[in-house]
Image (cartoon, rainbow, N blue to C red; front, side, top):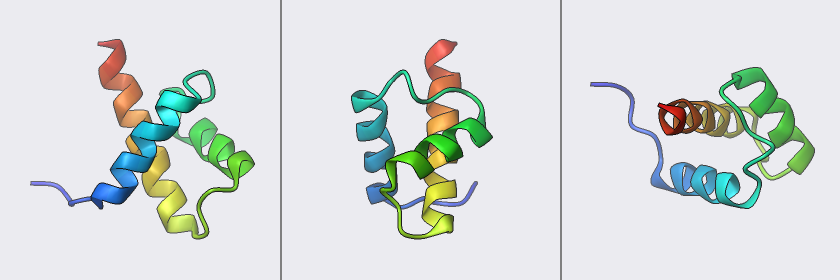
Length: 63
């Protein structure tokens, strides 16, 4: 079993991916920079969690 992530952060990640599909990719670092440009997350921890969720979603979407 892995760590549980907040439903709110997962929903935010899915909503961002629906709004800006061209901004996000499999690359975690690129997703972090894209989230920094959007200025939506007040803390570094929440930004990193959402960047990781976005990376995971895009990897699974391409399979």
